[in-house]
Length: 75
Image 1 (cartoon, rainbow, N blue to C red):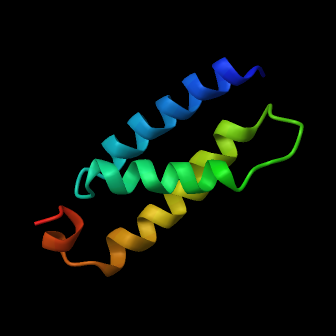
Image 2 (cartoon, one colour; image 1 turned 135 degrees about the vertical axis):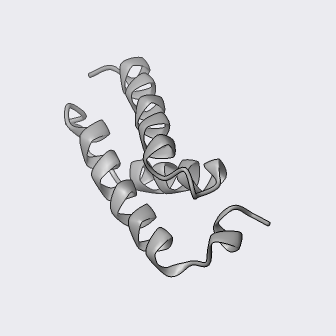
């Protein structure tokens, strides 16, 4: 997978996770995706978007389970 296609897929991951976690601020979702993506530095990139989505989803689920709603929405 080339870098341009990977970037496109990562953007799609952000959109899916923002939809899945509407109670979280979009910036929180984007940060979770960026962090998950930054941790994957290997040369084989085929499954990077899938791995990023799983990692970020797990992080966001943990945040959503432990934070009051007002804090999640940046209020």
